[in-house]
Image (cartoon, rainbow, N blue to C red; front, side, top):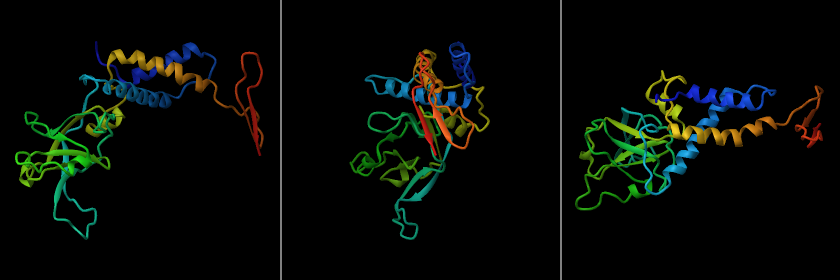
Length: 244
């Protein structure tokens, strides 16, 4: 079965909305697409936090090659530490959060995909790694301020590194797609498993549609805001508030 596009997902939901609420105003497609991003992130986080979970290829996106720059470890430009590390030039799209707060990256490594990927750690752990007899040349990576940092106690371990290869599952797949390909459109493939589509549609129809239908309205065209919630089935007004 061919992969589904972002627009296909959105218009499927709009069709479900129209089938159930024929006499209501049209549903903004921008809002529907935002729901798709958020519910996808929720479903994937639930899946990836379970024991023995795995990453299917349909949800993984690649960002590379991603350019690196060398920076001093000090945050004060006029007081350098003369200790250097590498970091991505551009901010990286936020990954789905996982246990340990490392993010749902499946590979952060050299541009040569036959090379071993780097060891992903938290920022706090990175401060204490690489002091052993046999791991001084290990390359570690951590995320800070939306950028990935590359460090090693032995600077020669990554002195020739200019670009890295990044794979992962991201909170906003549109941002990740545009990061790699600025020409990506909503008619291109959307990274979601087919079996998650029905779960996503069920959550949106049950938890999102009714809030749109029951939104507060201002029926009077005057100089005040006469806010009225929709009527109940018995015809009684649920609430009324006038702000002067």
